[in-house]
Image 1: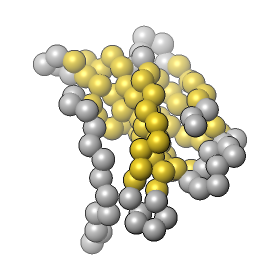
Image 2: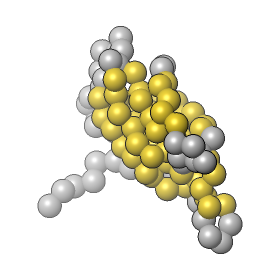
Image 3: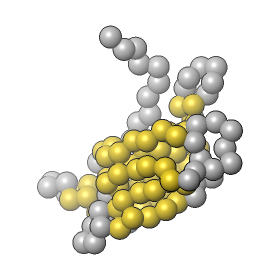
Image 4: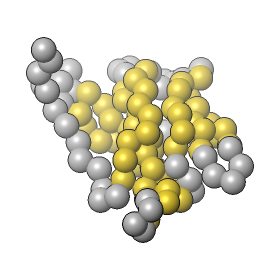
Length: 102
């Protein structure tokens, strides 16, 4: 059995699609990146998404939101590459983007 330590709420009509924990280039501590998709209408057509970056407080283990970036499509996956965030964004064309989140 696991105990919930903390949680973060998303916007209405927003669903998490990817999560990755790692360490950004030049950072002393790790972070958690969550990719989302935001749907519109009764059929939930996802046309946009967000990248949310959280740090984890070492004493309380609580998530602290550091930044949020709007992207023009639903996030398909999140990974780290050489200290940067590597993201796939779904749409008419699948794109691979590299973000430097600070």
